[in-house]
Image 1 (cartoon, rainbow, N blue to C red):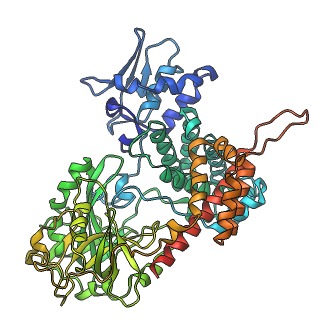
Image 2 (image 1 turned 60 degrees about the vertical axis):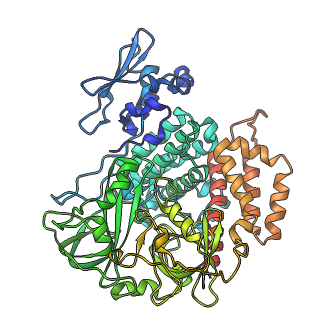
Length: 638
């Protein structure tokens, strides 16, 4: 388990050990209704008074008569209820104990040990999510989700039932029930929003997530944990909190839980508990570049990207607790793979011959006891198997990538610098008729050199260079470069030291003035920077739908209902229909209408509106928005 430091507030929160989700959920559930109403206020500030004892336990004092003591296990995580005790008379069903557990970070579920006796080069949740920050939630297929939302609650989790799921989707009855419970909790959390999504709402989600894990639904559980952490960060006003990320997390959770509970999902939607490494035989791989890894959960390290002789992509990662300092120093750390005597800097420009290789489905090389690796010479970009990376236009490479659900792969292209646009570098591919592209920092942290290197490149309009990076499929024609190099045969290109083997890792190497052409001749831009061209995503009125969805996440159902009573719905629908987004207009109208629906019982009294109907309407609009934005992004590369 790992500690999510970003999910707590206050400088003293780092003293509190991580708590298993089920322990926190049980503590909140045991409270009386009167104490639950006081829980959010009790959580605030109690972590600042935490004191660590010599035996590793952590104590938090409440007045003169109550002290809560947390005694984490060997993993540093509170995994059992008896590891959290309070000295008051109401313990263990007391407000003090629940408040301290609620202020503690949420631990990731314990993963089973890998089958190989040797160490796994990738540890922690950051490695599972890939390099960089946590990946955004995948977009739900609009057609399926919209159809279910239009059909109403009858098409929701209750539809199909356990029997239908077991026959059609290959899911067990327990999995369907767990997914239905998670859907109900997620719908209530969405209706509450950040403003009302306090500890009680979060505990309901955590309990449902734990049940989903027991039933064998790790993907749904992971989505629920992301939502809970996002709610915590938003309520604590954390600087790392992004409303767009929380909106995407809600979309992923509702889509996954709803589809599993409906019985229409296959077994593939359940997810995998951990990466399984399989025998890969003998491999010969060549280094492409290094990428710093820095996660919100306090992990840091490096991922070195490799390419096999057959064009397959691999990586070797070294990710451990340590945050930024670990990410900065890991670029020169030794490679823990089969006794290979080289560091990540050397591997990024060299190669390996691996015997008895073990490979995960994502292409990560494992370091089992039977793995043997020998360093070999590297190849320059454009030679050997790397030639295929730069042989086709970027638009063609992006079109061949999976539409959703997977991290985009690396692509290479030769470009000419046009100029700067904010923190982006405007470039145009050296392919006739190519669109204008934007180079954005792969990681915006100021202590990493990505942004500084791009600023230096932007200061040389007309420069041609070779770029290797990962396309940002959430932004129009945007590439996040990991490394750059000179274009072979080009006169006005980068001039890198010979030992760099024709490439500079933007996350570790710092470009200097000597690396650029000395003269100004030939460096006149072919076009002016303001001629960046229209951004189809930013220029579309879909931002109005996005704002409506995010308002629902921030303020809950009430915020969407308030928006429905003003002039905004008519303006939103008109703008969308003028731009040709008729379906988006209808789904937004359905969402606002459902949010403002106020049913009455048989005696004419106001009754609580269904959270499920509202959640389906919100999910339909969110899924359609994600699909529409993805289509606009894909068109921007063409």
